[in-house]
Image (cartoon, rainbow over all chains, first blue to last red; front, side, top):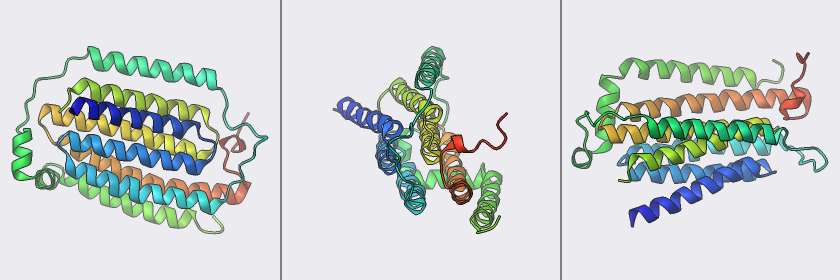
Length: 167
Length: 100
């Protein structure tokens, strides 16, 4: 049952990912990308990571994609039929194919270490995923967390300065 | 939970599609969306490995990647708007001022 569900979700994710690349209108690409993000959120739920799924839906499918769709509509780009929309398709497809072969080869041939960490599925269900993530983030990853806040501050200032009328 | 390899193969497929999109498309916003797709493929790998190894470090990393992606979206889209104001187009082929 779960295998069938996994296959359906994979099918939807890959088809919508292909649509992101092939759609002529950027709005359609953005909507397909939102579909892919929802599929990835489903994967996270299947991987016992419900907090990551919630963040995926809220931050990616919510905030980032709304910002992107908003920009596409704000710019009001004319879809010019005479102009070519893509270039070097054969060359790029070859590179993409080799990327895939390379990744698949490395992922299948490499040996993954045996499970070592303390976080089993039962423990995650018992304690709660959010609590475990929070504990991890505010103890072992406190310095990266603080650096992230500085990064966000820089991004805010940068976006405001770049969006001004005269740079 | 499915086995690890099926997640990895989906992630590899998504990453390759994102690569093809970055290389073929001309619209800067679509290229940006393909980069987001690649980031998400990597996120899936992180979560799958983290779950498989019973270690939450990978999921915390996914959290940081999402933060960086949000910052990147804000700055990148502001850049696109500035580019569009100057060139009246969003195609990457029009950014050819330094082309030899």
